View 1 (cartoon, rainbow, N blue to C red):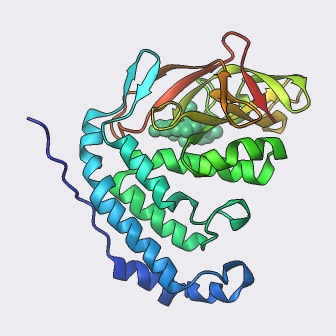
View 2 (tube, rainbow, N blue to C red):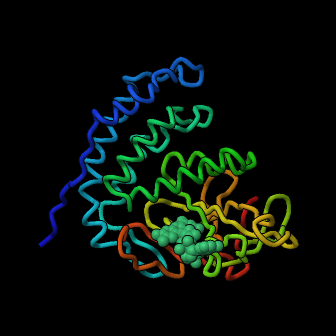
Length: 284
Ligand SMILES: Cc1cc2nc3c(=O)[nH]c(=O)nc-3n(C[C@H](O)[C@H](O)[C@H](O)COP(=O)(O)OP(=O)(O)OC[C@H]3O[C@@H](n4cnc5c(N)ncnc54)[C@H](O)[C@@H]3O)c2cc1C
C-alpha cells in the first residue's frame, strides 16, 4: 500500500515576526533607497506564501523522500517522486530569488527575510532545500565574479529554475585540507580552461530536477603555487551552453556514484569525474 504523505512541519509565525519587526526592526531598512520598494505587508505576504508551500508541498514530501531516497540508474540520479513538481512550483513562486538584486531580475528583498524563508524551507524538507540552496550560492558567485558572457548564459536559467548549481570543493584526499586538492585546469584560450579531476561529496551534484547543472569547481591552474593560494574557481556546466542560450554537447562531467547516508537521503551526494575523456571545459 502506498505510504500517505503527512506534513509534520509547523512554524510559529508570530515568533518569526517578533524577531523580524520587534527585535531587529527590519522595517527601518525600507527607509533606504535599496529597499524603498519593499514594505512589511509585502514581506509578510512572501512569508505566508512560503509557509503555505512548506505545509502543502515540501512538508508532505519530507518523510517519503528520506525513506525512498535518490536512486542512481544508468549513470543518472533520480530524485524521489514529487521532487520535480515541488522544484517547478518553488521557482514559479520565485521564492529563491527574494534577496537577488533587481538589476538581475530578483525581488531585492532583505536578507533577514530570506533567512526566515530558508529556515522554513529547510525545516520542512532539508534534503529538498539543498538543491535550490546550492543553486542560490552558485548564482550569487556568478553574479558577483563572472565575466559578462557567463553572466548572460547562466544567471537567467539559474533564476527561473531551468539550471541548478553546486559547489565542488572536496576531493577524496582533500576535505578540511582544501589546499591539497589536485583537480587541474589547463588554459585553452581567454577564460576557457580544460578541467580534469575527481570531486566527492557533491551535494546536488546530479539529479533530474533541471535541464542542466552548473558546477562551481575549485581547481589549480597549471604552474600555480601549492596550497589554497594557487586555487581558482571555474564555472563548469554539465552540458555546454551555446551563445544563444540553447544546450550544446555534454561537457565530459560523469557521475560515478552517490553516497548512501544515514539521513537527508533525498539529497544526492555525488562523486563526479571531470574530464575523464579530456573534453571538460570550464570558465574562470
Ligand atoms: C552530506 C555531505 C554533503 C557535502 N556536500 C559537499 C558539497 O556540496 N561540496 C563539497 O565540496 N563538499 C561537500 N561535502 C564534503 C565536506 O565539505 C567535507 O566532508 C568536509 O570538508 C570535511 O572533509 P573530510 O570529510 O575529508 O574530513 P577530514 O578533513 O578528513 O576531517 C576528519 C576529522 O578530522 C578533523 N580535522 C581535520 N583537519 C584537522 C586539523 N588540522 N586539526 C584538527 N582536526 C582536524 C575534522 O574536524 C574532522 O572531525 C559534504 C559532506 C557531507 C557529509
